Amino acid sequence: MSEEIESGAAGATSTSSLRRMNRETLINLLGQRVVMTRGQMAEETGLTSAAISRITREMLGAGILVESEGEKPLGRVGRRETHLSINPTGAFVFAVSLTANRRSITLANALGEVVAEKACDDLDPSDALEFLDALAARAKALIYDADFNRSRLLGVGVSAAISTGVQQANNHDEVISHPLGWQSVPVGPRLSNALSLPVRVEHRASAILRAELKQRSEASDIYLVNVALGIGVSAHLDGRFIAAGSRGFGSLSHFRLTGETTPCDCGRLGCLEVTAAGRAIVSNLDKSNISLTLQSQRLNEAVLAAEAGDAATREAFHTAGRRLGIGVDTAIALFNPKTIILSGEVGRQPDYFAGLLDALEEAGRANANTFVERSTITSANAAISVALQEYVLTGDLNLAKLKAA
Ligand SMILES: [Zn+2]
Image 1 (cartoon, protein in one colour):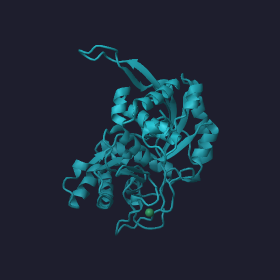
Image 2 (cartoon, helix red, strand yellow):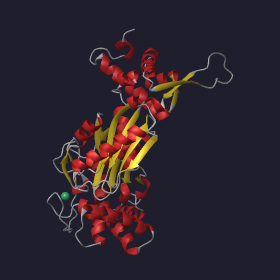
Image 3 (cartoon, protein in one colour):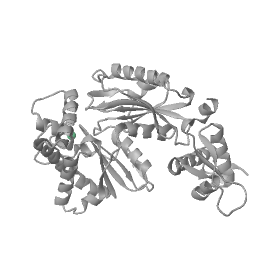
Image 4 (cartoon, helix red, strand yellow):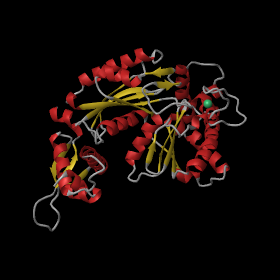
């Protein structure tokens, strides 16, 4: 039987792209269900058993899948069914988290489990290229020291505090980051060159949303707001993933609050970026003009002070959360998402979150607490998700490299 007939879509789509799509469907399914028989795969995907046999044979040969013998079905005679699952040591990815107050590198296996990790908070990001070279050197040392098959390392995922401007395309080869003090830094190409691996750079909000979607059995309409020193937004609407900074999506960061006069990087006054995020909280508590490094340090201290019950700090978080609530109310009106997720060290802070809910309730959304959630996913975990999605749970999985490993 030919491939085209197997897949039931002869003509328009080429064989290789069909193969790629089917491979992607199966590996994603295994990423979610963990263990499946070929029969269950056929049932879930609608692919023929011939197509499933061919794809799984190819992936078993590359070592990315493993077979195990399942339980004998009760009261039934005959052969035990073979179960398939992703081989944890079949592939590895490298993850980099770059934010103003936490920087780290992580080596993870094909299931996203951490093999080795190292904090990089001590590396100074003020000279971006020097910083990236030092980070790459540290990554090489971590890879060299870890006990794993290095030829199965497929790629690097980066979750970064990228600032979304007004006319920025969704191409993060040149990263602009106000929290890191970076202007057009070639993060992807620089790391890719130094590590000889493909690199995928994502905005932290998109990276966290990818990780959230992976955890949910049903992908619903989600609008995610990541709040740290600045604000990032990403969404999943009507089955479509919308990355932070995508054309046509805009950004909540530059939603202007009437009556606020704080100048924003975009040239206007009173944007949420400078009135409702970590930067506003820090300058509310400390009026002096301080450096970015100091700001992120202060933000860490403020989170701890609020946790310890300091009234002024808690109030500062509450006020900022309230302001974001005004912007989120508008986002709800525009996008009508089923769920709103708040993430980031500021977004998940309890007083900030309470302030946001208060503003939504004042705006007439009495049941806000039923559809606004907090995410516990960190930037480091999000970076692993980016890498897995880009290099392992994909139809473009580098099977030739794995076969040769
Ligand atoms: Zn602005």
